[in-house]
Image 1 (tube, rainbow, N blue to C red):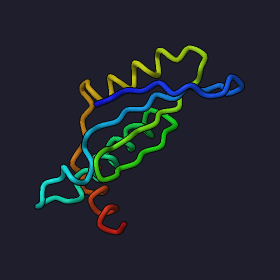
Image 2 (tube, one colour):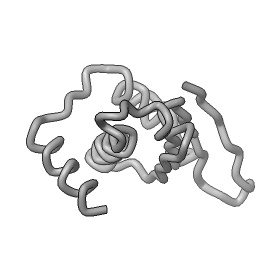
Image 3 (cartoon, rainbow, N blue to C red):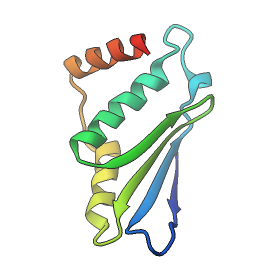
Length: 106
């Protein structure tokens, strides 16, 4: 995983934290080729639950999340993001099954 800080123009009231995971489509098991896409959806749902503004992309080699954080007092949002990724965040079975259905339709 690689974390980047992206500086925006001084007029912007946001910063961007970019989390890049080596978890693209080429790393998916043959039996589950859509696994990276599913993981992207599951993390995106958690970001929405915690009111993060974000962009997410899965490509051949990586899965990238750009998280937009207000410049004023960003520590709480940045800390929350890392706690969500590496802490005790759990995905329930209903949510997993819902996202599987969405991905099959895409």
